[in-house]
Length: 138
Image (tube, rainbow, N blue to C red):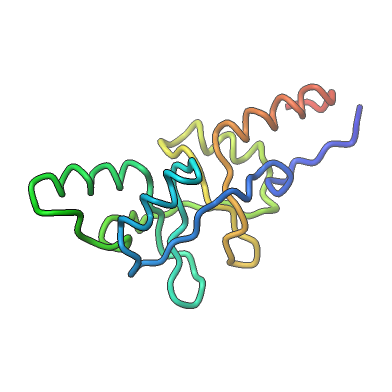
């Protein structure tokens, strides 16, 4: 059996947008569309995670702007403040179970209370494949 890590750190992506509460929603849309991202971590002015903004939140902002003249609002206006996170040293198997138990598609990954990446359902599936191929019992 090969030596395999179960740490989220080894499977997460560091392709993560960081946004700020006071940032204009249009700037977030530009970041998402130019970098092909589905969401971003929202930080306060000292770098603490305070929310998540998703593409769905931006679509909502765009649709609502159709009834008004132009896009209005900030990232803080549209973001979700109810954020579930995982630690970089958590077991990827525990994260797999979390995905099975709730509706989230991605979790911000924290290391020492700072956002260091994101882990998605696809990252977990890739990890499970790697772990299974190593002979480690899942």
